[in-house]
Length: 130
View 1 (tube, helix red, strand yellow):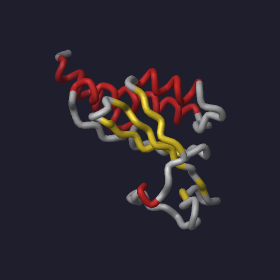
View 2: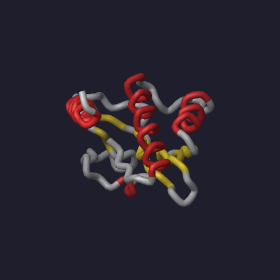
View 3: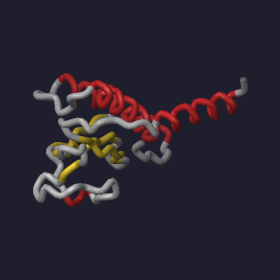
View 4: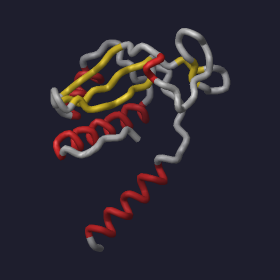
């Protein structure tokens, strides 16, 4: 198998898996971005209120949030940052009490995203959170 075919196959697998349903983590959610000037991977944590039907709610107004909502309407509870994915994971999962992540699938997702962000930071490429 050529390198191009392998990359295509792996991308197809990832794209299909990204379509699956994942329950919201009651501990909150993260907006991940790069601070290229400081050479940091950053993750803003937001509280996650969920109604009885599984929809995310605005922490102040109690209104349902759209997937297209502007996170600037909400205040982050904390901003985590690190120079590498590993440094960020240690800070978040080993040094923060209580840990704001309550589901294993969410922790795994964050680890994958932090690695993707680190690669984009090192390579100087664009990073868009999945």
